[in-house]
Structure formats: C-alpha cells, structure tokens
Amino acid sequence: MLIVVSPAKKLDMNQVEDAPRTEPEFMGDAGTLVKTARELKAGDLKKLMGISDNLAALNVERFRDFGNMPRKQAAYAFAGDTYQGLEAESLDQDEMSWAQDHLRILSGLYGILRPLDEIEPYRLEMGSRLKTKRGKSLYDFWGDTLSKALNLQANVVGTNVLVNCASQEYFGAVDQKSLKLKVVTPVFMEVKDGTPKVISFFAKRARGAMARFIIQNRLTELDALQGFDSGGYKFDPDTSTENRLVFLRDYATD
Image (tube, rainbow, N blue to C red):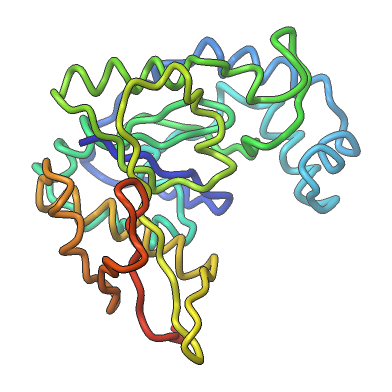
C-alpha cells in the first residue's frame, strides 16, 4: 500500500548525518511557483497565507534565496505534529528504504515528496490561492499531476490501495477522477463524556504514528491496519466503514 501525509509548517533544518538524499520529482514545477512567489511583497504573502508580518518577511527572503539555502531530507526537515508521530529519525535504514517507496508527502511547493527528497525551507500551503498561468490556486496548478504520480508509484510497488493520512486541505489536491486507487482514510477520535471528537493536535500525531506503523510492519493488507494501537487508540468496527477506519481512545491531555 501507499501512504500519503501532509507536510508541516514547523521545520528543523539541522542536518542528519549519513542519511541518503534524493531530488524531488517536480523541481521544475517548484521553480515555476518560486518565480511567481518572488513577485509578491511581504504584504501579499501575509494576505495570501494569513501569516504574521515577521513570517511574511521571512518567506520573502526564502523565496528570494531559493536554490541557495541549506537542504534537508523532507521526512527529517518537517517537524510538526504528524512528524512527531512518524519519528523518522528513529526508523532504521531498511525501514526508511521501504518508506522511500511507499510514503509520499503532499506539498504545496514541491507537489509530492519522497521521505529522502531534499527540500529548502519554505512555506506555501496547499490551500493558498496563488494565481499562476494554470489557474487561481495551487489546486489548479497541480491539476491531475499528483494523482497520476501516485498511480505510477502504486504500479511500481504493486498495490491498488492508498492510505490517506493527510489533511483534507492537502488530499484535496489529489484529483479523485484521475486516481485509480482504493482510498482508505484512518480517523482518530478522542472520547470525552461519551462523545467521540476529532481533536486536530492528537489526530495529526496519530496519522504520523499510523504511517510509522505501516512502515515498520511492511503492511500490505487492509485488515492489518485494524491492529494499530499506538497511543492507546483502538479500532472501532461499529463506526467504521470500508473506506473510513475509525480509531477511538479516551480523551487524553498529552
């Protein structure tokens, strides 16, 4: 099976020693987006992404210097909640090699990344309405590119299943009409006062942990996903469907 996850806003660009490096597949497209973003002023970026003045100024510098900044492998560079669950740095060489073939990170700037693809520091969320010659948003820009790339990789590894551990914002960039894979989405919920609820912070971390679970166990069968129990989650067959696997746990504060 293939797994997709979202990127993270938080980055850690401290280098990882002795880890292999690969180049993103859609560097040409990323370069096109950078050229467009370079034409925007700090105020434009602030409005585009809903960020602070300081972050807007920082990303003006990043787009200006793109191509000349330090690079780091994507799975190690992203440092948000999902990646705290993934814990990429503790995966061994064989596990990371398997992840390189089966894990894909959806990105507003790079399109699709493998774990060991090098990235430069950036911020460009998939939901951004950045106007290009291809349309009024990044969804327009990427079109069916991401779905076709996922179809091709699924063929390489011999699967017809995609486990969607990405957010709605990012998975929305995958054109469903062009995608030829069965999509299964794990949903992680906290039960408080008898009512299950998705809490973003916990759900993001759990999606990363699910990706790690699949990688470490080299899962190929959908039924095996039900064995996920990291962090105290348990599969709930009563509220699950064929394409939506629900995992519940008692509400936690950490």
